[in-house]
Image 1 (cartoon, rainbow, N blue to C red):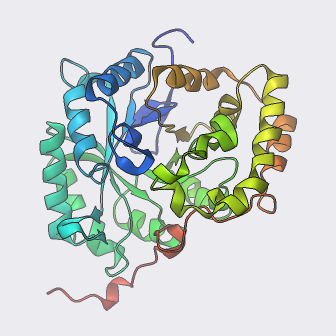
Image 2 (spheres, rainbow, N blue to C red; image 1 turned 180 degrees about the vertical axis):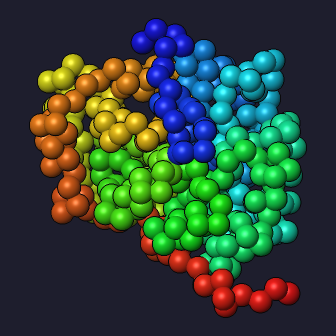
Length: 348
């Protein structure tokens, strides 16, 4: 694909426009997928992505923690900031070495101020609630009484997003202040969001950002992608990567790989193309730490699929075919994001 020639899409209905494919930056400095990579190499990768037309960059304060935002802050210097739409997140705290999901107003403001400092920015384009604090009504965390609405009014963030939120939580939040985008896991083998969450987002005019569209590397190289699982903190927590399930699931990759060979593309390009074909309100954010992998991923935008090919692809990884859950029970997801009603809350 010619450098800089990536189509743009409208993400949500509040005015945010982004490149049709984004770049997930977590693996560049967070330890979830192994040791952090050399800073100068990752900055070069980010600059290469922007030159190639990928302008939607995704990070979070918890990646590192904190180091990924610092990396992005350095990478955005020298006129790069004006060329990108930057998304970061709050909501997962590691204070005193303890992981905690927080959404109280004081924490929201402190987290935003800290992210702005690390990113060396005056404003964040898209600010997500990374995980939902189920101890508080969503209205308190985000909007009517909380800090996010104030942060928008102060110009410190432009748009509000949510991640791993249930359909009802999304509705309640959007009723008080427009939600621009919902980030969720969506790939050929993670399709539980299609029943209720995707239709809710589309009904409300909310953009959809698909993380892990390559199934955490599975659709890049199949079982080879997780051969070093002993060094991978995150994959250990995902049942479908456990040996007893992975042996079964490898047949999914084999079928995708076979179809990719027929199409003249790679399996990762085919899996990414499937996400792109879900609609112009969907932006996948595959992550990588290698320029050659990035170049391969961006070519997925050129892969065309017929309706018949979409059906064939989906048959490879239907719900009854994939073995194992996408997360272990201790990791919060949209299925556990319900919050108390606002009427139950009393200010301290």
